[in-house]
Image 1: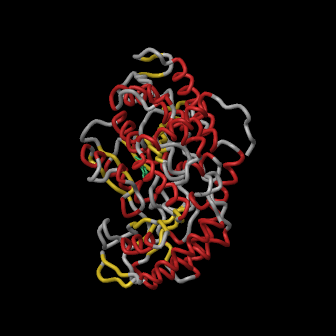
Image 2: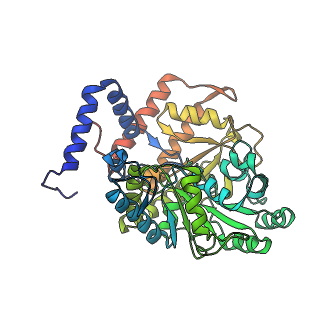
Image 3: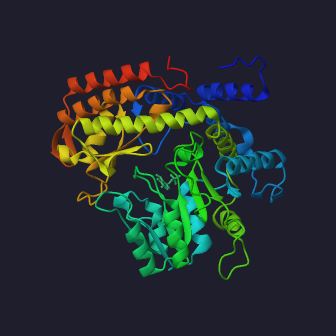
Length: 452
Ligand SMILES: Cc1ncc(COP(=O)(O)O)c(C=O)c1O
């Protein structure tokens, strides 16, 4: 990296801040250091995470946090916002450019709140929404009873075909039968390419709005490695911390339909979203988070990120192939994105036991239900892995066979006492942990200094 000679006010601020934290709160500083080291030493394969770019992370620690700025650029309810407006406008412009959108709202605190904003923009309590079922790879916010989406709205689901791809015919049948106001597409644990145009055709046929939640695949969409829904869906939502390698937060985009008005409303879709974010759901936005989003959006639009995204996809394919070669059942038959879902119950280990035993050894994945799973969400029959965190270590497809060898060894050595209890011999555990550390040292996180 290029050495910059001059110290700036911000570099002094950041150095002073970390020094001060160490002095005034050594206890907290030590925990933060532990977490830094943990991330450096383990292989994080949680599909819903990545290793954020430090240039984005540092924005979250900036004094922008001190500014209360209800409203939008040029139209605030507080004074002192002239630079805040510049940051938010930059984030908006970058979001639009990155995804080819006509409208962007960068204020939502998470993808969950972005989804809620869209739902409450086009639906009233009791209206029907149609979303992918949880077991088929859908997300809680797409109509589960555990979320406000399934409590306030009448949620209907669609699922997968026998071949474990989205059942577009069933989705259409359910839409014709239930006439939803909103159809939600986009997934949390589905590894195949999504046909956005097919969803839009059904939405138009039944007079529904279409929300594409690309939380998981936003980076691949930005890099052109997954088709974009932005001009197919009426609304596109995402979070900026899973595959955008940026700070935490949500984003709402609208493509070619931004000037469309909803039936019975004088407001355009863009105006509805604008009002639903503030003041309906949120007060002052988190401006440091918005600065981090601006940075993350520039990063995913860069040629450098295109290579990272390409690696994400190649690693996932290699990971899936390595599991298949070891005789595992890979759900959905393989992968087109960063996600690989593996049926571990077929090998005699529940999802939760696999997750915990692997974590004991320094491999971080998460338990996941598989289609028609008989086990509850706290147990599950599968694990979900993702390659966002491995790509930033510049791993090669050949490394995936080594990772799968380790995972396989762990799963073979787990003694399952019950679906939620297991034993792992300590000598074996520490030998695997040492091998994981060796890989982590050989393939360090490219953007983070190695721990001392
Ligand atoms: C498809 C999808 N939407 C929304 C969310 C929620 O994201 P957030 O944690 O930003 O609220 C997730 C999280 O996993 C997700 O996978």
